[in-house]
Image (cartoon, rainbow, N blue to C red; front, side):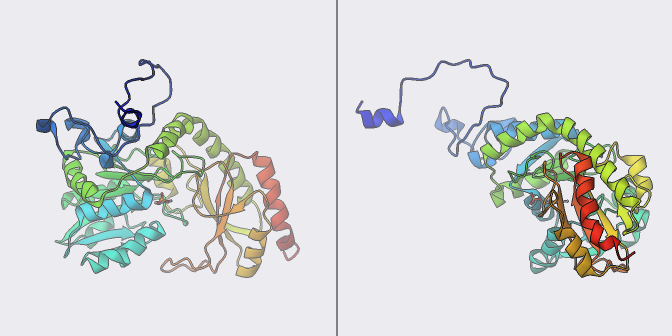
Length: 387
Ligand SMILES: *Cc1c(COP(=O)(O)O)cnc(C)c1O
């Protein structure tokens, strides 16, 4: 062969049987079949063999298999991010003329999708009070195709009575989807509590280092698997095996990171709770958090994200000034990484509650809690003189 052909069809190879602890990163779009008769284009690669890189290389399917094992799922689809997990679930269960229910504390872009693209497609999504519990039964219509739960809620952290809501939904044969990002798929056992589909932004705790975007959609049974698979294929939700390789590495340290983050976060939250500048601490493990009793009943731990509401005597501008003085806490979205973050929600839309621009969300990272508390103390100092 000409050397140019050898570049494409080499005969020399590295020795086989390298036994390492790391999962190999398999890149690939084309899958090679042995014979024409073997050719398939099937998203069910776990059962029927590999057909195309779009549905996942072995690295991607390995991550899916491990997430499914940890969550106790029938199967986990790996998708480009948490938001694409949300879209995939809506588009798998809802069609023009159907109705879906979503808590008004759901992740902001979930609500944007509901009011934007989904409305254009003729899917009507209705927001409900996250603390409605079994009362969700009254909102279920003939054409309700999906009920979302997200517990705790984004930013305001309300814990939902998921088992009561699942019971009401299943009585009307409506599937329940959970955004289980807060619990990293482990602090709340979605399937033991009857949820049909559980998604996570792997971007947060599984990635754990603010350097990748991935999501997972885990299903309880074959019915949900068959509902989601074709849509997953049609939407072409491919992910990078390199990102999956990082997520697989993240999984190995998830246990120690969550344990440490829980402890540090509680220390910071409890310190803030006894400060006179702070009116309320919205942390699921503290009694001041709406739905705390459901957290105590249903969760095995708490994570690194919570919010504080500053006392009414401070203006939104003063609270923003305080947040700007933080040094270790960086200003930024997303969470679950190693760095502490703080971000204000000046225009938070929650029916019946006006936080007046005084709600600050904190993500505690892996810094020493005493240093984080000192940082918060110095930022609060100028507010303090006005007590
Ligand atoms: C971050 C987040 C998402 C979206 O995840 P991306 O990977 O950023 O798309 C979805 N739900 C919740 C609760 C989140 O915090």
